[in-house]
Image (cartoon, rainbow, N blue to C red; front, side, top):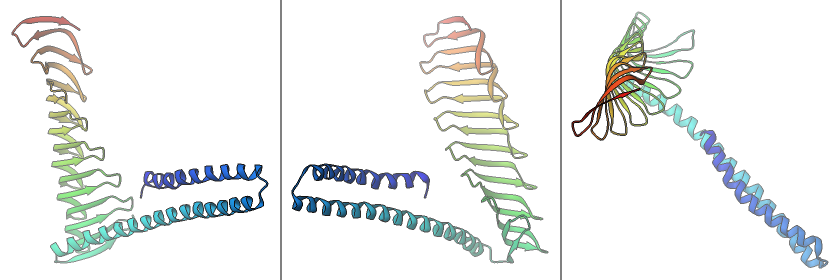
Length: 271
């Protein structure tokens, strides 16, 4: 149950109660100008009943919110239990539970009191790793879940992401390709949440070397990258079929560019 959901529920009964408060205010104004005792008494009874409705609205909404919080906590616990049961069913041999001094809890295969084989490690900050272990380190194939929503699936070596893998980011973006020392390095494809895509070389977690930028408007850039930006020689292919060839620096075209339009005409342009 997030804050947005609470605010939404709170807004629902607040809007209804505001209507009731407005009616009460109108009735009170009528009450102030009339001398009829029976009318006054009737208006006061209506005001009392409306106040009861307002209080009930608030109590009912808060009761529903509290129940949703409880259900969500129960679902989180059930999901953890399900992961453990699923793992235990798939790995019947030598499963044990180990609690470490740093708060990490491990469930899985153990050799000489140390995680070895298949297992799940629950970290105190809410992160979780499921996969292969060797000498109490992630080694082989595994999935790492970050508490903020990111996820990595792929190869591990000596407790670090190294080899082939896929990184899913909580904003919807994704990287598929090579990893080295926990960073994007080698060949890889990055999918941006705006529809753009990069395919090519990576170094130290940044686009570096030869690559292609595909843009969501149908155009693309092919050429050199440095420090995550277009830099060096490159060709920009426009959506309409034109091509612009020249140098780039700091992600921008510079100097003289040769333009070959879709009709075969050649022009030059200085940036």
